[in-house]
Every structure is written in C-alpha cells, then in structure tokens.
Length: 289
Image (cartoon, rainbow, N blue to C red; front, side, top):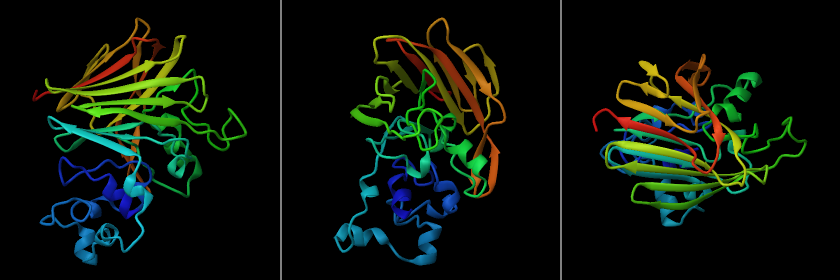
C-alpha cells in the first residue's frame, strides 16, 4: 500500500496524486500527501509525522527486497501545468478486480480533472461491483466488450486479461496500444499535451472494421453549462470530436469514493460513436491558456 501511494505521488505538485482503485478506502489519502511519498523532505506527510520512519530508504539501500510495485504499471507525464497518469497492465489480472487497463487520470495545476471513482466499500458487494467494473472507468468499451473478461462475467466462464503497451512517451505525448481480452479488438490511445494549454485524448480503432465505441468519463467538478459536444467547467472546457454519429450524454447520479463508506457526487459523461480510423477525440482546454 505504501509503495503504491509513492508510485502514484505527483511529480507536479506535492499536494495531490490520483486515487486509482482501492487507495481511497484503504487509508485516508491525505495522510500520504508529502514526504516520504513526495520527494520534498520539508513537507512531511501526516503518516511520517506519526511514524517518523522512511520505509523507502531501506528499499533504496537494498536492505529490503524491492516491491514490484515500485516498478509499477502506472505511467505519467507532466507539461504546462497538466499531469496525465495512465494505468497499464500486460496480461495480468486487474488489481482488486478493477477493469481499468488503459484508463487515465488528469490534473491541471495540481487539481484533479479526470478522475478514477475509487472504491468505497468491501462489504456491500453490489456497490463494490459498480465501482470496479468497466462502466466505472474510462477505458473504451468496444462492441459491448470491456477490456478484461473477469471472473463471473456473463461473457465467459473463464477470465481473460488484456495487454496494455506503452509505445511512446516524450515531448508531452503518450501513445498506448490496448489489446483487449477479446483478442480481435485493438484500440490506440494517444494523449497529447499541447503548448496552447490543452490536452487531447484520441482513441482510434486499429481493426479493419468500424466498431461500436463507448467511454465513460468522470470529472471531479461539475459542469456549469453545455452545448452540443461542448462542456464548460470552472477552470477548463471540454470538446468532443467524432463521426457524424457521435453522442455525449451526462451519466446520472455519478458518485466517487471520498473515504471508506462514503460517496460524494461527481460529474460523468458517456461518449458513444462508430469508431473508425479517424477516432474519437476528447479535448480539455484550460481557461488560463
């Protein structure tokens, strides 16, 4: 757990990191903001103030076997105030069952924009399943198929797992290849941080035929107003581009984990289209340029 928190700690600002998966219920997230999870020793975390102990010094010195999570599957990049995180796995079962291979989180000036809903309970199985399944993450759903086929799925009695591969990470660009458990399905996800104060997320179909596409996006703040494929928030705007069939609708009653046992409202959008080689693009533009 501690290594996961450090792996996900923001390089952009010491006071924030994406709350992927089960981080939010396991322990209060604000206890792990600061050193030794962040690099600045002058900003100690609440955990460090209580324990006065840095477990990572032993890991770095070789006294303790290094956790595989230290070489985690999370990839991030920072540019122009934006920070993008992507969760990638290669054929492994999803951590705690979250169907999130290829999902991303985005922050702007240290404030969360695109979020993971987290998990609020282990006891309420119905609520838990809603928060770990494919509808709770922003990995594309193709022809009705989630990226992973997990145990107990209606699709198969045998679980099958996807492969996420990082193909490029430089100059504010992250390119990802997603090979679905339904093996004939492949999606490319390209994330570009532009110099003009915007991030563009482009999903493209790498197969030979058009496919049905659906992605669920969740945002920390609420939408102030919308018009067609354009949505205005307090500090940023969102534009969606796709084919003539593209639709965008609000996901009603969207909620995220706040701490164990507690859910609070967030804002959700579902984007649907026929996905061909031109793809579907989500553009997030800062109001500050």
